[in-house]
Image (cartoon, rainbow, N blue to C red; front, side, top):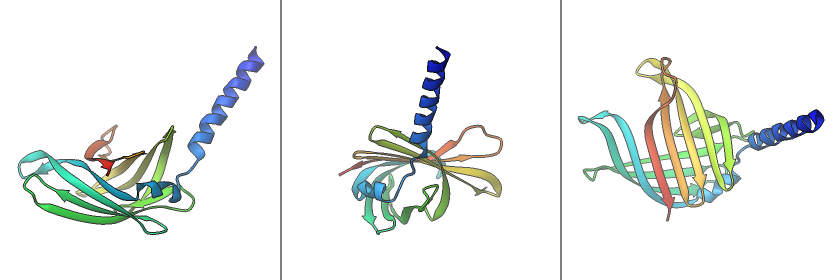
Length: 168
């Protein structure tokens, strides 16, 4: 009985490691190419408000070795902000570049056809040391990107921006 239990336990551990070990590739992200719409909710005290909502249009373009994200954010007063930057997974699959910054891919989760990537980096915010985190949730017709920040005195990441998009 112990032998069967031990063998089953080893098999489950191998399966978990095999799932985590599969890196994400640029080719896998090509499904994001196209037009997306949705909403960005940003937190941070600006103009006397703690939360701002933006209608978002996104065009993702295939640039061969990366994807170019062309965002158009429209604020509550109709003011538009345009941002453009590439998303690139490095060849060994442990790092990505997004928002003109390099992140370490710290976790990859695959549940059926849904992919979740956690990417983190260290940095500074208002001269304070912080950790930044981007969480990408990718599925058929959905793209969610959450940007979080964690100061040294915090346990969890605080959400600064949450972008929820659906493919047109």
